[in-house]
Length: 162
Image (cartoon, rainbow, N blue to C red; front, side):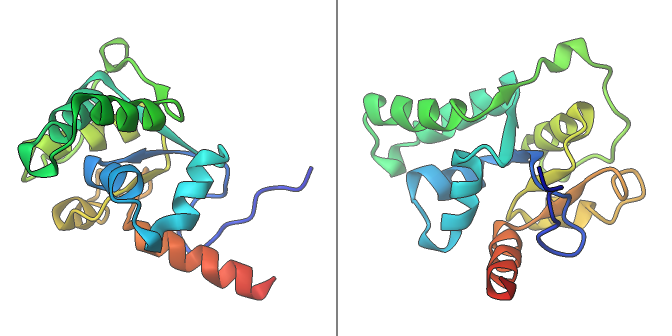
């Protein structure tokens, strides 16, 4: 078996555990963003293993129920079930809380805490405040916070190299 190859500078070797924030999950499974096909395939093929906690699951279900999405309860459940079938659930109550910087948006803290507590090398988010935290001294070296498009671009470059 060949060792996994890094897909872009600073990204962990694959396969890898990761945390997807709620907006990334929506982009992949609700909106089926055509620019993120490779990322969705990595998750579907088990190359990226998303981690989920009670807090991240609760937020996903709450957001899927937003009236602006006009999703039936059945469609909400289907999206959550498809995504969660790929996830490994982590009980954060059973792990000591890591020392981390506070996110500007308290709703983002759960993703940062999950990634660091579970030892995931990657948090995938489009949230600018979360992305800036990747340079914080308490995060740097422990976790990469990357936009999903960065992973797509890295995969495209890797495919072009053959």
